[in-house]
Length: 114
Image 1 (cartoon, one colour):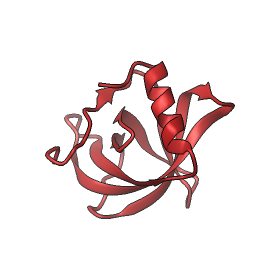
Image 2: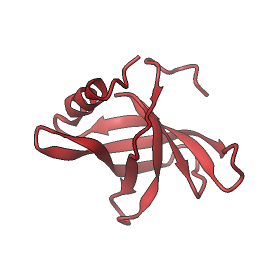
Image 3: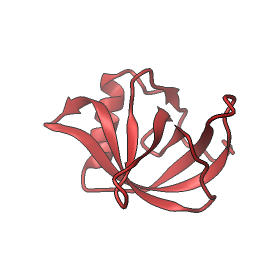
Image 4: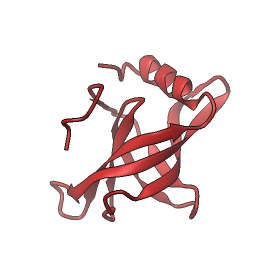
């Protein structure tokens, strides 16, 4: 499940939510992230290969923005150590406009780079 990862992920101590554009609902909490992908913890499981249009709410404002929009594919999913939750790995298929740079800057600001 982690073999194809290009960059090491770092856990974020911040409350970072991922919101589904289609429903407006929070689908999970980001627990680690890179510019390539993220891991979420959620109250529901995900199907491998599903693609979501998401807005990630950032814990800090950068360049007058407090969120980034991503298209993300579910790469793996399974139960969390807490049986009430699931965890899932997402690969970013695309980042809107300059959101990739914005995400990198936030990660540097919060010391979330490996």
